[in-house]
Structure formats: C-alpha cells, structure tokens
Image 1 (cartoon, rainbow, N blue to C red):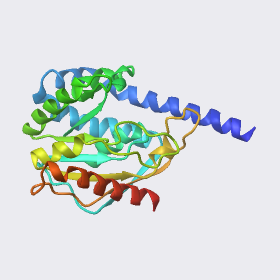
Image 2 (tube, rainbow, N blue to C red):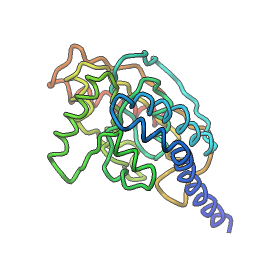
Image 3 (cartoon, rainbow, N blue to C red):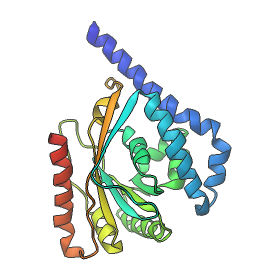
Length: 244
C-alpha cells in the first residue's frame, strides 16, 4: 500500500513539473514571441529562460541546487557545454549554471511537447536522428551561433541512456565542433536529476540537486586526430564523478 501511494505521489509530482513548465510561458507569451522574432532578441529570451523560467521550475519542484565549481565561466566567452543526461531537469539546471547565453542542440522529439515545444524549436538547434543530412545542418547552424558570440550546449550521450546505464558512450559532434572553433569544453556532472525527475512517470521526489562544473578542457592546440582521446578523457571525468 505504501509503495502504491508513493507511486501516486511521484506521478502527481511529474504532472506538477509540466504545470510549472507551462505557467511562466503562458504568462510571458507576448515577450517570448517578441524575443524570438529575430536572432538579435535571443539574449533577452535567454535571460528570461535562465532567471525566471528555470528558477521557477527548479525551486517549484523543491529541488535545491548545490553547485561545486572547479573553474568559472567567464562572461562574454563562448564555450561548449556538455553534461550527462538523465532527466528533463537537465535543461533547467544547465540554464542556471551558465550566465553566458547558449543554444541547445537537442533532439527533435522535444518540439512536440505542448507549449514548451513551440519555443524550443524556435530557439534550439534540432537534431533529427532518422535523417543523416540533419547532422550537417546542425553543424552549420551551430557554427553560425558561435560566430554570433553564443555558447553551445550538447548532451553528448545523444539521448537518454537506459536506467541501468550510468553514462552512455559519447557521440563525436560536441568535440569535433569545439576543436574546429577552438573553444573550451566545459564538462558538468549532474548527480541527482535522475532521482529527482526520472523519465519513469511513477518515480521522482524533491531534494537537493548537485552539479559539478569541472575544469575546462582547452582545444587551442588540438586537431581532428585528438577528437577521440579528448572525448574519452571528458567522459572519464564525468563517469568518475558519478561513481564517486
């Protein structure tokens, strides 16, 4: 009986998350439309997403961020932000951790989520994994955003791993792009989001959500041949932190 009630509570908690996602969007709809008409408005859109939307959801879910920083992001610089991916909360936590405007590279399926998806597809770079040509289009779009002075965020697992996988293998895209543009890679470990809001609808609970921003990996002296070793080195950093 207790387990049944816990599952009901977790299901209601999951529903509450999507209510929190929608409320600020519906209230701020006119401003969000205005700031997504052109790319020049994106920094203002990002400010709202980071300071209002993400905080509203994180604290509304009863998730208290606890952040450990081994190095700090510098204002005005472009980075490649990477992290493990186990929860929808990863999006909000990533927004909270970077004051520098960045653009998500994410799966096309998220654009189908009511309300959230409308803006997600307008401000993110969408990946269609069923279309091989999509990767080339993503790369070009990311190049343009970097030239405009923004950072890029990619969850390099390429999707959400199975429940029993601590950290899936990384795809090449984030590391190839960082080397090509000579931007530093900022690895992050999200410790608790899987426990707070997993993709299993009958699980989840409030509590602290820890994040570690690891030391940055510079790419100034690297080229394509270093891609594989860089990818594995960064994966090892995140995996070790998760296991610890």
